[in-house]
Length: 142
Image (cartoon, rainbow, N blue to C red; front, side, top):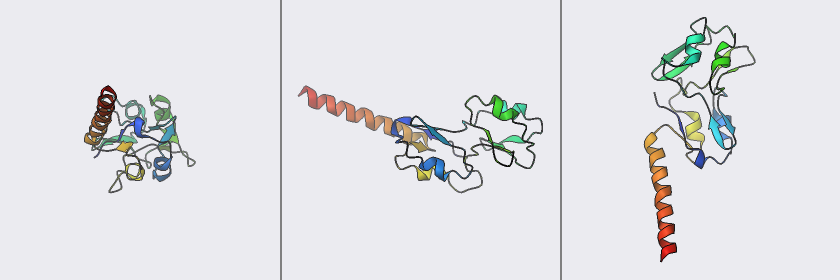
C-alpha cells in the first residue's frame, strides 16, 4: 500500500484534497493537509484501544472495519493528531489510504503535488527548491 506524504510548502489551501476524499477524512488547516498518519501497528493508539477489534492493519494502512465499529469514540479520543471522527451514522471514520480504490484520490486531485505517495517526489521537490535558491544567490553575487 502506498503511503501518503505531505509537503506543506507546496499546499495552496485549495481544498481539492478535502473535496475528493471518499472518506471525507482529510482537512486542510493553515495550509497543511491533515490526515491519519497510519502509525505502526505496535504504536497505533486507536488500534489498541478499540474494544471490538474494529481497527486493524492492512498492508501498512490502519483501517476501520465499519461492520465491527460500535461508535464508542475511544479511537477518536486517543488519536494524537485528531484524524478520526464519528460520522453522521455514529461510526468512526478516517483515512484508509483509499484501500478500496486503485489510486489515492487526494493525491490525484492535488494540483501542486503537495500530497504524494512517493517520497522520491518530495525529495526532488526539495532539491529543486534548493537548486533555485543557489541559482538566485549566484545571480546576486555576479
